[in-house]
Image (cartoon, rainbow, N blue to C red; front, side, top):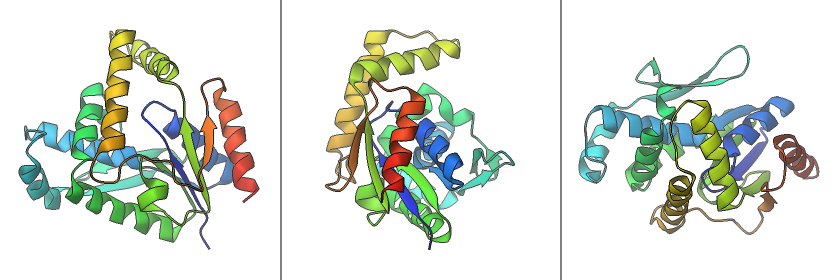
Length: 221
């Protein structure tokens, strides 16, 4: 039987980095659900569809083929209509677009169905905002990974600086707070900590310490 680990949490909590490492340690497939929403966001931006135009975005969904592939190192690649967009989806603009389109019911239904199908075939570590509450409610291990707004802003600013992108730490904090509010108050699958999810606050933990904490929780299940 495939084993599933669901990791939920707010933007900038390090979910993708941690989930990827946990999956590698266990030999499971890592599924970055946020990357799928980013792919939708990228498509909408490329087609110059207004992010607020839910009707046009929903009409475009049948034209989107989103799939995941993995190289010899186990690194996930996101394919949008056959094109590898793994790098293109990592800009701040696409991130914002993903946050908006993920609020639309039809978008979520399309991607959730794909994510659930993947988890039925193989053992996975899946991260996102609604994995334990919506995508994999029967996951074997459920984690709610978070960190303070200040710490998440510091991490995000560091990422941007490493890419050579200018950033203002206060603006980054404001963006994170706004995204938290949007994710927690959206009508479709809001970000919540389900009752049986174990809370892991990584504010004062290193990446390795966070990985070890989650592996320890999973091994005790």
